[in-house]
Image (tube, rainbow, N blue to C red; front, side, top):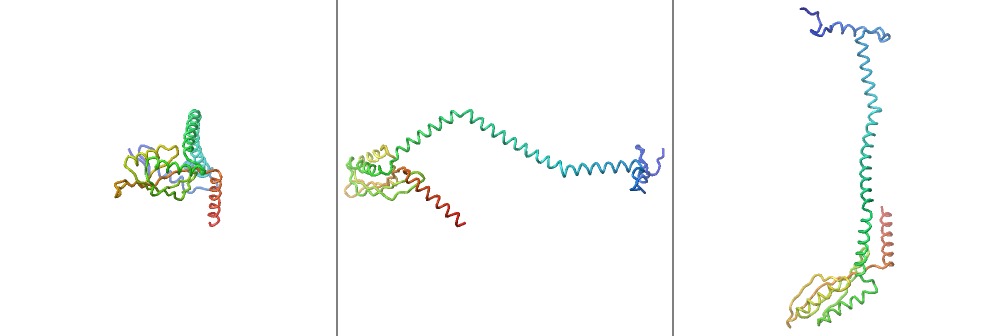
Amino acid sequence: MKFGKGAVPGKGLDLNRLAEDFKNLNPNDPGAWPTAPKVAVFVALLVATLAAAWWFHWQGQMDNLAAREAEEVTLREQWLSKKRQAVNLDEHRRQLEEIDRQFGALLRQLPNRAEMDSLLAEINQAGLGRGLAFELFKPGAEAVKEFYAEMPIDIRVLGGYHDLGAFASDVARMPRIVTLNNIAIESDRSGQLKFEAKAVTYRYLDEEELAARQQAARAAQQTSRGRR
């Protein structure tokens, strides 16, 4: 069996004839073109149209769709979270009431400014009641925090071992919060023990002090903005 020049065996396609179809095409009369050039131009126009539609229209829609799908996932998670909160609302309220109760109980353990003198007298009396001799009882400067103030007290007392232990226990059992820090115990020449510590007690700030603190914070913030 013989094949003509340019023909593909088994497919019946004459490449030379196909090439001749693309020669001498009249661009002003595409209707007279052979079938192969018409099909090629149609396919090229279709591909170009699809590419342009994707670039100028469909790509933006796909990006917008992806963004909306991500937003849907976020909104669904938020909805589930709020649903769980709504289901447990009564439990959250109960926990909040318990926290408020505990905070109120702790706050009542802090004296106000008017009660600080009586608290200092109680600490002093606790030592005297155990037969201790005070060598030093010196309240320091207050350190003001967010809603309370700390007052350090330098203490140095002399006494026996059991009396010092009882004094520390008495301070720990006071209805007001008092802590003993930086404790040091040593024996003096007379055989007594010298007990040194820094007691720290706390008091809550009254409304006037809180208002003054907030006003000072706002003034500092405005000054900081002005410097910028």
